[in-house]
Image (cartoon, rainbow, N blue to C red):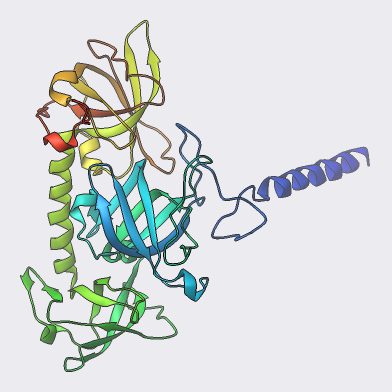
Length: 382
């Protein structure tokens, strides 16, 4: 009897603890509890899973060097008419990732006018949100100025296992009727979607550029759109008719990304510094092709440069410090982390090799060359 009583009380306490632990401490898109505040990012810490806020919009401006951009937010049922079509400016987080055509990308890879999906965090306590325009109107998402993930329609829907089934094509009216489905054609949406076409719409067919006449009912396609929600769901920039065409676009962007990273280094932040042994430990960020991370190999060297939260370096040819790779290990991949941690022993501990600071690393064999002058932080400009 005593055991049963103790057992019952223990279970009750554990259950109460689990329930207490399950109570949300911040607002999310999933719980949508307006009584809670949105998650506030902490310096040098990756955010918890599911804590970002989603919204989509069209890219209308950017500074690709500073990794800042502006999108015109989509119209949604959550908005009043006065909130429609308002711009939201944001900065990419140091560990914020970008995807275009299904592969990692830089902001400069994405054309103005591309419709994008994003995961964002609310501005810092001392930061300003998006400015109001047109008689003090502003986006309801105007305070979400820190971007964690940004991707075009092709990347977004492919990652979620969704696509479009072509129901009808009206070449005279330039209209495309589709229904959202899983990539195998199952689980259709309840209602069809009507996209606009134009003579400028690019149709990708295998390894070739097709025409609007190649679009046919029954095809499972992917699209990139522009002009979203202003005059309907949007206008097709691109239509990919088959897997081969999507693979071609993905592989081309992947090689663009690989070249970009090899010339600028893999970004991460410093976890720890052993001042006595001169060892710097770095967690590398997500958004980098995993095959590049495999180039940190035993008995090789690593070159490191100091960078800022924009991921810009100063003068990477003259400021670099190299030394032997101590270790490259896999760790738990938190949101924003690649799951790879690298330790190396540079010939000199630079001022910027401090916990919480941003660095970029070059595995053995990667030449460190000058980047264009406008990308450098040194010498300082007026």
